[in-house]
Amino acid sequence: MASLSPDIEAKLQAWLDHGVGAGGARSYLRRVQAALNWVPRPAIELAAEHYGLTFAGLYADVCFNPEFSLEPRGDRVLEVCQGLACREVGSGDLLTGLERLCGLKRGETAADGSASLLGGPCQGRCAMGANAKLNGQGRCNLGPGDGPGLLAWLRGAELP
Image (tube, rainbow, N blue to C red; front, side, top):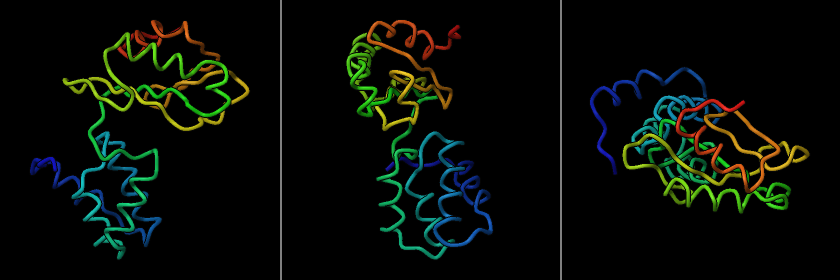
């Protein structure tokens, strides 16, 4: 388990709010995910205690919810949809090409913490071709040949 700085531990405490039960815990954990790009175990422990939930139940929620990560993610997170409709139009090949181009495998984060490459669940834009999103900003109508442009986007360039 990663050791957290006193500053991060203080922030985890400060982010606790007065919500109740599982809804309050999820809201808190979303705040942690957004701020840190991952949910460290101490945040789950704090949430379980504060909101009166079991650690095991809350940990399971975090494990099976794709919006959360138990490992640190990069400052820039590129997620390529791997839903059925997107895979039918080439998102699997797009993701494989991105792996070759950037040297990361799906689910990995660069050693310097700058970027993460993910294959993710359906993004809900199935009628618009293969989809990807970078830190929540989406792109659609992508195909296997769009890897170089997405890599530039991941590295900080703006796409037209």
